[in-house]
Image (cartoon, rainbow, N blue to C red):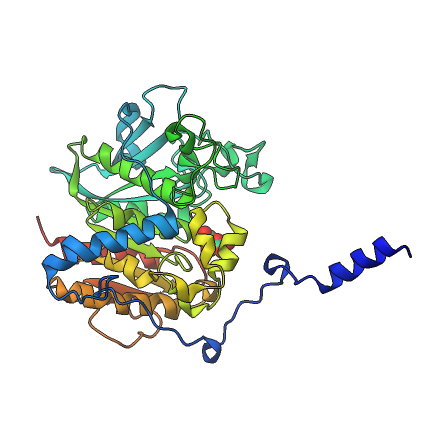
Length: 428
Ligand code: GTR
């Protein structure tokens, strides 16, 4: 063996194993959850306590919002000045006469050449006044949320899955209605509420391409090729898309813009929380099984961790968030503070027994530790410190349930969300 080779081998042997080469083993043992201390939502970074609603609203809320913006999700721009809403299709007799259907194209740059998203809206046909609407992003295209043959097939990029009907990165007829069990459209309509949805891939395709596709390039400064470390990743872009849907609702007289309920599942649940935290036009925010980077406390390191999520999905959060890989205790925030940003508006956190990866207990504890802010603002909060048994929902100002079953959105979940919205909206 020559000397150079010998030295190289020795150096390789002695080199510290890089963290990213380590195999990740999720912790599912409650007794191995590390000790941690959560940052206090009611104490300014300077150490000063926050004892009044006014101080929360004027000082602490903006401070926390900024921290999440700069360190976790990334800063996003405002609405694009040339945005145009174009009604592509509508019908007053959709779903066997039960619904009004609208398909609205949002042209972010005002032209067909620029980035765009398609919004699908169902409203109860019988409504005589503006109605509350649930809005959320979907994973598989608008046409996948219902078997309604009139929904346009999603046109933007999709991960290939021939079995499900995605070929050459495009949706085919075969994928129509694929995710229908996740969207209780008829149940909402019967309750007098509408449903609106957008394919998340319209706003930004869910893979890491250094932010060349999706909406990011529309906002690059001259010569910029990728977002800065404190600028928006994909979750922040999706959240931005939800705010653009809200911009549309403000122009639609059939929709009650003061009663828009934001919801999302999993990565899109993380997105719903961030969108609802930033944009106070959303009246209620619902997180379904959102887990790490969503409702679950990062410091617990139970199931998915910050390091793991940043490595599996390097495009979801902003560059700065990677500083906290395996250093959750150094985060200036934790996810209970994200929920607190929704206060005093109602927020609902849903977990599932089979979804340990998302840390159900960590999601519950987030809800619990957001409560002091809800109380300071004169609302009831969660109303209990005990995590409820499975299938025993709590509908306080903060809602929580642990559903029996896997990581999913089910009709049971929707029943809770509709009841929760009704409770908080009352009769109008
Ligand atoms: C998983 C990811 C979770 C969650 C989930 C989903 O792979 O680790 O954080 O977002 O995907 O979105 O279904």
